[in-house]
Image 1: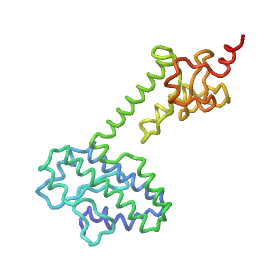
Image 2: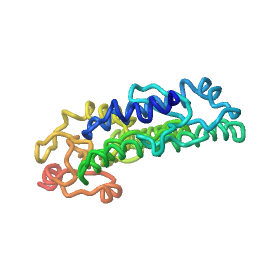
Image 3: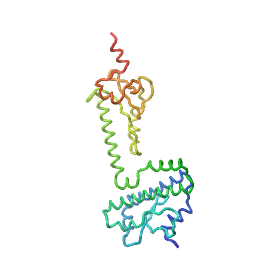
Image 4: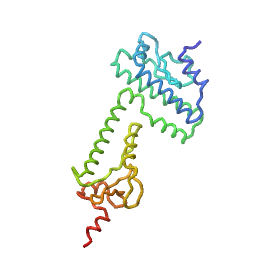
Length: 263
């Protein structure tokens, strides 16, 4: 009888569970990824103890059921599915624990992609399907980014930049640092961490209408506020660019400018 890890993740998993569509492969990827993340974060003490360097070559497997297992590789050659990195237990005591976990995380990321695209190749995904699968996968941070703390660092940096931009805009709107009022174009977010800021921004300005065209506020467009009538305008509607707005001390919309020009 073959080893449990070989059967469960190798031949057994391949024989009993063959995702054939992009969505099915993506679900398989997410399940395996969740299991690996669990091993390297919440269950890290258990994972560490199971990777005994005195044992034979061990591999870390992730299952579609969001579970994980440390076991010997599949015995058959070649295996049904691509195999994870071999011998992760041998490096455990030769490195700092954090560095070792990051190394396992990098290899786990590579394994997840190899399994996903193995299914893609096996079931004949064309160029469009392969691209769609990769784009779906690429929306998630890598296991390495999660284990190394890079995701939290990126989130803090984005939050800092967002707060700085928000404070600058609020300060400008109240005339503290400058009397120019404008909303900068929002930068695209890489992941889910930035969604809350966007939603708050949309809720705060969602009912604002452009004084020129009457269309709603949109966070991905440049807006500027008139210091006289306090109305907001699309930059494109009043022919004002972000660069030009930087040098305007007091902005008057076309309507207010015409009123002031009259005798």
